[in-house]
Image (cartoon, rainbow, N blue to C red; front, side, top):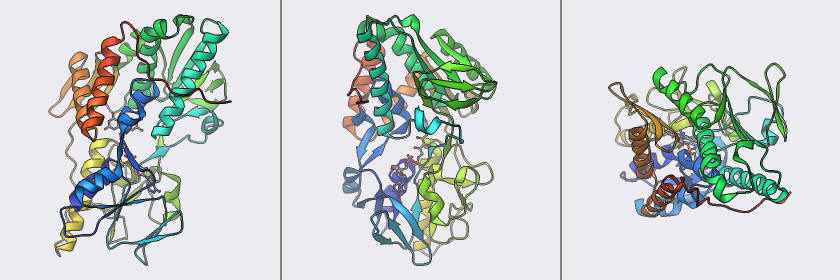
Length: 405
Ligand SMILES: Cc1cc2nc3c(=O)[nH]c(=O)nc-3n(C[C@H](O)[C@H](O)[C@H](O)COP(=O)(O)OP(=O)(O)OC[C@H]3O[C@@H](n4cnc5c(N)ncnc54)[C@H](O)[C@@H]3O)c2cc1C
């Protein structure tokens, strides 16, 4: 049984499908979400369907089984997992890959008032809230006066802030001519002294310059103390108006993990041995964002998730054949983040660092290629090309419904 149809779970299931085994993939959603492009959905650049792929289609192609459900308990003694509906699913080997969830670090008001960006529903909610605020101001003829605050200077934060700034700079004049774009602020708040901590210093500085060039107000060395419906309070007591706050500041494990009775390390992630078996459990593996190998763990990114998912599945194969397991070794294929049109950073192996148009095209090509399904690839390529090629004229925001108050 594989739990979680994200990067790690799908990679594991694909490998397991090659063995003489009965493989069931369990997920609480009927689709797999491509999280790296959620911010595009949230800013009206992609359709929600572009980042979602049917799990049933995936399993049918690989001769696997799919079970829709949320795993709420793991009974290691009886080798079964318990779904929220009360049903037990037995396993010989279990691969847990349920990913990450938002961490508000107990900041008052953050859970109630800030938008996060982990699921397709999160992205739709953020997009609709953004459009609702723009629409209300346009109807009222207030000429703007809108502040968008993004909390967290990691890849998700900078990508979201960059996209919001470009939306304002390019699209607003056409989509909402009543609004004065100069009255719309995008503020990015990061508590450490630099953006994109995982990247080389030159790429971090480039990112900062590019965001500032797009008019993003970057507040470094600044922690958020509280979030309210219409403002955020910064460390030191400064109050910043915030018509919409996006929380991209931290991750933890999904809440159900606590009840599984498995060893949890930093950030609540499941502690694994070098072969990715959960400590103290011979038949349970953990992979992706959920697993922590060593004290620090691998970065919570797509590549570590794919590679750990594959490795866990290969070890199940070895155990089925009566062979000893092998330790996991991570092959770093690099990291990327995009700031906006023709501006991205890529840190590749052999100290190859790219930025600007080359990095942007590499980012675009890689993300389209990684999407599941030809239709999603074609549709995302069309929508992103439309967005980035048409932005000088500012047309084509993908809209949804205005939420009812
Ligand atoms: C907004 C955003 C942008 C990102 N951008 C990038 C990027 O540009 N590059 C990059 O490399 N990485 C990026 N990442 C990180 C990357 O998406 C994750 O590291 C990766 O998705 C982790 O894969 P996973 O399989 O561990 O978990 P996930 O992909 O999160 O999959 C977990 C799955 O488990 C399911 N699930 C959870 N709990 C349960 C349960 N109890 N029962 C049943 N099913 C459950 C979920 O529905 C989900 O389908 C981004 C992440 C986010 C949120």
